[in-house]
Length: 175
Image 1 (cartoon, rainbow, N blue to C red):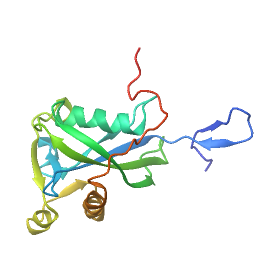
Image 2 (cartoon, rainbow, N blue to C red):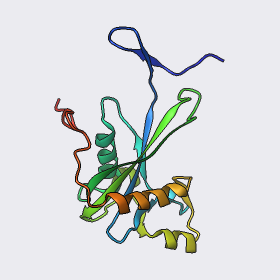
Image 3 (tube, rainbow, N blue to C red):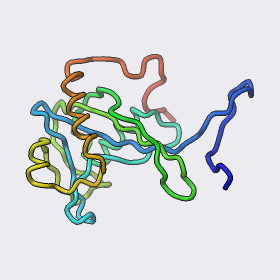
């Protein structure tokens, strides 16, 4: 089977770089070390963190913040802390090498109001202990250790204030 992963050459033509579609998986944690999970009515009560595809010409952070607005509402205020985990996975016959970019945000205030992408969803702030005790079904992420890693990284980084996109153009391009 031929390699179906698209490539792009460097400007000088000496290198070929892999081009992979990317999904963002967003962990939002509040000061009580609880994770925001949503339960969409079409998913039979299963819980998930915010997630979605990175769009063309979008930085990772811009995609993360857009997905937060679309799924949890524009009034939710968050502060980026950094990546939790990055992996690749098979998506379908056209996207053999999709990247999963797992990102951590801290809740800074504002209400959760499920947006168009999650209309009709319930939401809840969950501690790791409550998730385990209630044996809640979590479908995104499927790997529960990622939730624990997100909480551990929150504990390490919660007071950090870093420019996570130094020397980059604005997060959203003006057209």
